[in-house]
Length: 486
Image 1: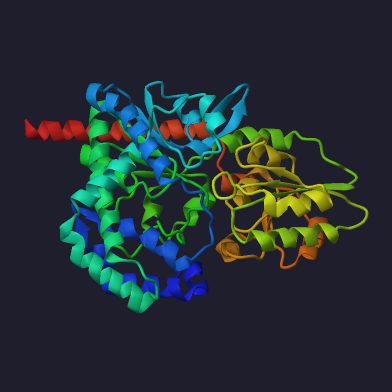
Image 2 (image 1 turned 30 degrees about the vertical axis):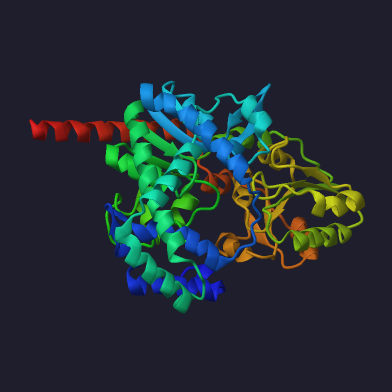
């Protein structure tokens, strides 16, 4: 049982039901249906209070038409690209001069002159960055999402109707959550059609390899299987065996059936080890992180206050339990030792936390500096100057540890997600705000091994080697297959 299941009766019941009923065994068009449905069902069962900024229907329609127009030219005329990447608008967080680099892929694309970039516009706060992008997107992925959903409604996958009906009933009676069979069928049908649209794009672009910036890219993964193209998934945030998209090790089926990547590019050895109880463990490889490489050098060269008379705290938000987080930070600052000059910076999440109002008290009472997710400095710059990082269950805990910044898990909603990571060397637990000050007084320095465990050094070389190896293996397989047919 995962640590999450142990904390949530609904999740525990969900994981028991999926094994009891064999939900991973049902196939549609050759792929495991439950693989596609597991994460959205998990999100309902977990009931984490994430806040999203939703677009109006008018805005969605306008964007779908613009995105479709942008894709049509490539579908009709085509072009050649060796590498296709799918990234996020919010990835444009690394400023270099008057341009913004994609924190996931621009380091990769520096070595791949023949490329194509799909973008998911996951926030409206990065419009300026998109206009000044170092490598602008070639197309908006919303065209595929939109038309996949439309075709899914017009031509649903009727062969999955019984499975969806039985699944909805089991979720209600055994897990205690209500998700309609219509929603489940629509989700599957949209993925079915979206994968075919992606396969058409890959054929027109004559792509050799596809890379994505997050998990759950099932449609693009399926399209790669249909075209015989290697598929690489980059680690995004916290991804371990407790993640809803991590397929349990007991699940049977091929990588293609389970929509697993050909390679999961993890930050460091810690993350590979954390996938030991999943099917992804067999394809996980430590490659590092471009930004960690860059900012690690800056962190190690910064000036240190030898007198220990001042401490700079950095809090990274997630849009979770915000009211209690603000109160916790308020108590923390009020309980600071009188001999310390304490400053606090609050960095908002680039997608899930766009509301500065809850933090106004920290700014007014303690002089806290508030930095929006779309504003500079980016979180890595802020970490390089921090003496201590605080958050609930943010992936920034691991970015901090990789840079040599001690990180504290705040005991608020969702903190149990970090239990396995707390080691008393890099990542710490503080049950009360006052405990933070005791912790600060006893901290030791980080070693290169401590930092490398979370992010291996030498990202550019490692990822380039991975791409070359996968492309060579794919071309050899295609050549052998062609030889057998002759």
